[in-house]
Structure formats: structure tokens, C-alpha cells
Image (cartoon, rainbow, N blue to C red; front, side, top):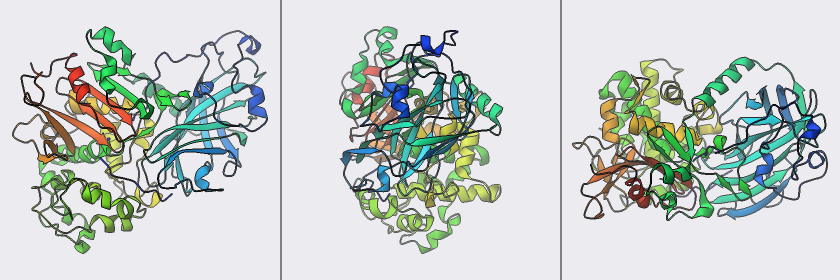
Length: 587
């Protein structure tokens, strides 16, 4: 898919509150109430006319435990040609018309293991399918029995279509009946996305095959999933903020964010993760706790800057002064001058190479040639096409292309310090994301060049979160000061600068008004008594930000608030003011 991606600046899979648990009942399946939507008859015959309520894919509150164990491969047949598609918004004609492959699923062939009522994919995270429009993420689902299914069990799981070369996510669910050797047709629908320019519903019910066999490392897959679920942060409904913190209006946190475009939001404070429901066009998503949503430019902080801080912790803070041109031979052909440009300048978006210093001018102009470039060569050629306009480290200019370049330079530096097989994303995943217990799907893969699992990581975008991941990443940066289980993962000095804890190093003026700061890959807003008379002090709020309307505000009072939306709305000052009622920003 050759989509046009508009300007870029940070999704959250919100944890289901009060989700139904499986009842391992001694009742016969006939004693379990039948549900009106997606009955056994629906799954064994006919073609769906459109999406059903998303809760039809959820486990009923009074379901019985599954009678069968699903282990092996689920293969969908004919999905590349069947199904329905309804455009909601398509600014750049991505869907086209007729039998455009974007209107259909990629090939689906998935390995699962089952652990009681848990249906666990053998492979989680972004999978490069080779499809012209879609890559794929599959998440953990559930298995159960319900009335009307006869002697068969039922399974459902979440999946996400990821635009090729882009960070947009389109979330859906699949469900089917199964026994020891066969499966029914598979009902699927896609009803939700975080993608400002391309929105649609997709649905279908292709034939499917089940190949039962012992999956390699099945016990390890089960154990890893159980450990991941056990390590998730304690959760409360978002509305409980009013009860736990009297005087707080939970609705005030999302003031100014259109509810029809708000996928998810939540708040983390003192070990508790307050989460709101995850919306779709057809009700509440059935797998909120495993919904995959995009990082977009939150990756500038959570990946590129974190990689920089991890290298500094590994090899010393002098890593920051490493010259980019010494580690990126492609710069010999650059239009600009990269002499004296360091890793820190690259992470700070202050390389001095730009066509225009006006806010977002270069970023908007680079959409076609940089963001849509698939190969490493084409992406690099677009990134190095700017002339030298200012001294390195003196002017902030928003360039996702510069984040891409410094990511490649840091990757080459890592290879020189270790071996040629080293991978920068894998280092961050193993040495940062794993210790803070991010989900397997986030740790597994990122967007890469050449639409290949071994391509170069994009750096400035390309992570795929669930809500728990996002809260834990903010916790690492804001609460735990770069430590996990007492081990320092990120260089404390570099992190303090990023989080505005070093008054002597605020970074460079940034943003459309130049009133904010950008330091070590992390933007920050300044709140002053002059602008906000309710405060008696000046304080800085570092945050992660992403294209379309994604903000993760990491406040100095210990509150982190995030929202994931896709209507280009960046309104979060009211969230800062409301958080002041939880804990004062000014002592």
C-alpha cells in the first residue's frame, strides 16, 4: 500500500475492566445460555451482511470451560477474495475500487496453543506477510463452550491489520467452532483503527482448516504468556479516580478530545493503572487488554531515545558525542554537511540540516519521498537530502528522517562494539523492554525498511503497544528513573535531561510557538503562573507525542495520563490541571 502519511509528531490497548472469566462448570453445554449473535448456525452457513456487535466475540459471563484443546495450525481458505468492505474515511484512496487487495485479508495461517481457556498464538508481534497492503499482528484470545454449539468448543482472538510501511493499526476479531480435528468457518470483522486518514469496516466468513499437531515449545509459550499476564499492572476502571481521589472529575481529562475518535485513555499513579473502555464503531472491543495500537512518534522517545540512553549506560555518556558520519557511510553522499553532528544532535532533532526551519514544513514536504519509501536505500536517500542551514545543536527542526538516520548510526555503532549480527531494536527489547515486562507482541518486532523482518528499524515510529506496555514505559521514565528491579537500565544523567529534571539542561526551544523544549528525544511543555494563575510555581511536563492525536503526559507529580485518538487533537492542558487535584504540581 502506497499511502500518503501526513505530518508526524505519540494507543493504547485498554485493559478490559470486569472482563468475563471462564466458569469451568460441570454443566452440559446445553445448559449454557445461547447468545443471539454469532450462533453455531451463523458460523456454519451463509455470508455475513456486515459487522455484528463486537461483544459477540467476547466470552459470555456464564460460559463453560472448553471441551477440547486447540493446538496446531488454523488456516483460512479464500480470504483474499471474499468478504465485505465499507469505507468510513479514505483521504488518499487507499482502498481503491473493485477487487483491490487492500479490501481483503492477507493469507492467514496461524499456530496456536491452548492453556485452559487461554488461546495463545505461537508467534506474537508484527508479522511481515508479503501482502501488498497489510501486515499482521495476532494476539492472545479465549476458548469456551456455550449453548447451541453442540459438542464443539468455541474460540475467539484479536488480530490487527497493519498498513504496509506505515504505523496505522486496524483492529478486529475472529471466532470459530472447533473439536478435536475440525473447525467451522471463521467469522472476522475489523471495526476500529488508529489511523486519521484511512478508516473502514471489513468483514467475512471464509472456510478454514485445522491441522492438529504438537506445537514446538508449547509449554514455554504457555508459561511465558502466564508470566506476562501475571506481571501486568494492577487495574481499576477510569471512573474510580473520582472515588479514590475526591474532587477529581474523570471526564475532565479528555476535555477537547472528540469521543468518536478517542480509541483509549488511561492514567497511572502510584502503582495503579486506571483504564477506560476501548471503543469501536460497533460497541466495546472484545479484547481490550490485548488491543494493538500504534506508537507513531512516541517511538522517538520510547525507542530511539531509549536506545541512546541504553547505549550511554552500557558504554558511558561519551556515546552522546559520537559523530554520526563516522557510523553512517551513506552520509558521504548527503546534500548537507554532517561534520560535527553527534548522536545527541540526531536524537534532539538538531542536526543543522534542513530546508526550512518553520514548524513542520520539512516534515510535511517529506511525506511522499521519505515516509512512503520502502527500501533502505530510498529511505536513506530521502533522509539525507537536506542542506546545512545552521550549526549542529543550535536549532530544533522536526525531522522524523533525522531520527531514522541517528537510529541507523547507533545500530552500526552497536555492531562495531559487539558483532555484525547485533540489532539495535533487539538490544532495546532484550535489555529494556523485557526487564520492565512489556508484552511479547511489543518486544517481538518493529517497523523496518524493505518490508522485511531483518530490515533497518524505522526509529521514529513503528512500535505497537497494548495499554499495559505504555503505562510501564512511562513508569520506567517518570517514576523509576530508568531502573527495573534495582538495576539501572538507562543512563541517569541522560534520562534526567530528557525528563526535565536537570534545570541546567532543558534542551532546545521547540513546538509551533517555540515555548516548549525538546531534549533527548522527548518534548516538554512549560506551565507558568503567568499563563496559568492557579499555579504558584513553574514546572515542566515531558511527554511522548504521536501523529493523529496521541499524547503521553508524564507529570512531575507522578501522574501519567495518556490518550490515543486519531482526529489530530492535541488537547491535554486540562488533564494537567485535573491531575493537580490528585497531587499538587507545586509543593
